[in-house]
Image (cartoon, rainbow, N blue to C red):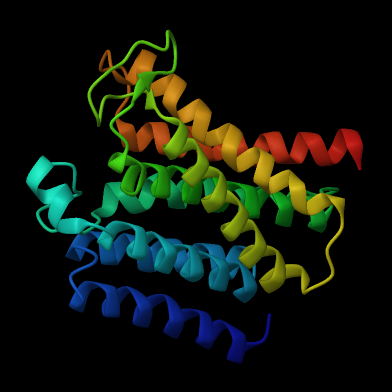
Length: 241
């Protein structure tokens, strides 16, 4: 990695995080965490990986701002105004850094590492849009027994929310794939979509079980399911491709 690329990674990580803080989309600690995650992903992975993270973050911000007034009225927003804190950022950042470290293991195919990284982002995107936009659905059921539950219940799912989650996985995968691999698609592109939706469903399962009982926080849940998505993708690539 040449020094100009390193400098660009530093400028993008710090500049984007500072801009999000000034726009009140990140708290001060969220901005610090975002800069740290950006630096780690960019330096351990590549500047293309960093660009994928930035694109995902912009997608997340748009989802957050969607119907923000309604979410505030129902108490479903993050922070006071929808801003993300360090714990939100790390819930997504930890799986991405994990994928970057995974790619540094001797013998790991770079393509597998990149697909695992896109899958970690896909899980985060699917979960984010399902949480931020899926709250519009009133027909929410607990994933473990399908009993109807109030909106915002840990482990609650809906047909609308699942559809939105799938869309989030598809969009984030398409963006990640183009940025990292270019416009040449093959069957591998479906792996992050599958892993993204599977990770989102796993998030709901953990939410309905261990999270609802206070054994883990929702941020730990996000990190665990992101790692799950990355490992699932790597396993699929290893076994089938």
